[in-house]
Image 1 (tube, rainbow, N blue to C red):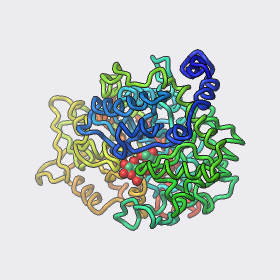
Image 2 (image 1 turned 180 degrees about the horizontal axis):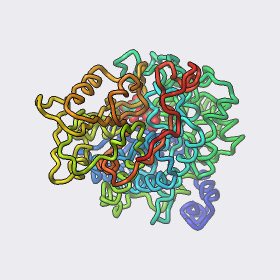
Image 3 (image 1 turned 180 degrees about the vertical axis):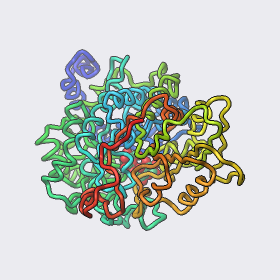
Length: 604
Ligand code: BGC
Ligand code: BGC
């Protein structure tokens, strides 16, 4: 090839396919395998990025630089991008992170409601605006790949990842996920595609059966501190193909139509076969039948689960259709394995070229070659007022009013005295939930934001006395017109959120009884990643609000409680009356209706 021909791929005026082909034609096997390799940021040095031609680096949940700030994030991403651009062909890497409710690993970023809360808004236009803000905050740090949206259609709320699913209803998931993808990939004000969405987890991560998750004794297992943990997450889906296609597949088809170019494969199995090994669903159905032209990425250690022998696992999954491997740790072993497999003819050159061609096409289409670095103007906007306003609006619209006896809500800003209880009332970490700063999330003052209590204090009249005690330990003579109790599920992520009994803790029940002694009317706000069984307690409460995991803008809750804006949220999951009504297939089988059906929500 002549020099000019060699440089064709750099010409942004040429067709993407021609550029990708031109690049591919010039690549060595080592360069190709590097593109297929995604490494966790602490497991690789910048020098190794160029030495091994690495295609992607990621932060896992809590994969933060120290100190954790937008600026250190931007520097960290740059430190990996620079060596990638110093390689012979200067192929930019793409940095990935789980910005699943805001750029949530980054301290100071705006934290949005988790998807279950966005689902309750039923508002695609809002979700698209939310995603535009997420894209802007990601781009400000140089993160151009967001492992979101989850298009899970959770059928069993005992699953810890229920909170990542917009709804148990397929159409609603499709509607909101496509809005999210549009917002993320076409950040407004920028003439380059913003951030690559990763639609996950293919297929039917939300359809697994309780107690169906296998153990993988040959790999380090996920922390399990209760028997419940990892009982359903990563488990087995047992439905037939027609059900699989009807409930779980449509959001992927809709996502592709909305421009999705990357899909993450699920840890789960269908009828006993791991998705990472599922050639039929990955290649025959997704790539061939539905014409998916983007690339498939594994989940974190996803390949390692499918076989005790790593070589067999890699060969099986690449031949099943996986294009990029989220290794994430031992990338040298991964690269060696791919090399050997190609040398031995177990993975064909065509399969490698197909995988790499897909990855390059996406990178080219995103304009990564033209703009590989952080957008500095966006760095300054991370956590801005404007961004927080969008989150506050999302919070307001995500609240579902489920009971309002005697129209106790909206509350009067001029009440003489309000008593507030529950740790959730004054804890940013609890209102954000899992996947916030740390993988599992953590209670406490973990990032910037406004607590619910602060929101209440700001909205009431100067003469209103707001008294807060986390455990409702008020002096015996304290009486108020209104008591506000905020109950909160402790933060969790993935299988650590699997719970066999979705009931209130004895501590929460006692707290509710204690607060009742001090107020004439009681309003209960629940912070949770799913409906909980509250049937026995509901009679004690005058009003009940499902607030999901609202994120950093607690002011949005006060706005609605005190009537500045109305309650408009509607359930995106049915609310079971008893544990017997779980999973979703059992919702009506006990001859009793659920406590509240999907789409229910009162207005105020
Ligand atoms: C990472 C997460 C990952 C998890 C799975 C954690 O250490 O931070 O991103 O999902 O491990 O093992
Ligand atoms: C999760 C994915 C996530 C990945 C990287 C995995 O454990 O299942 O949803 O994108 O970790 O953090």
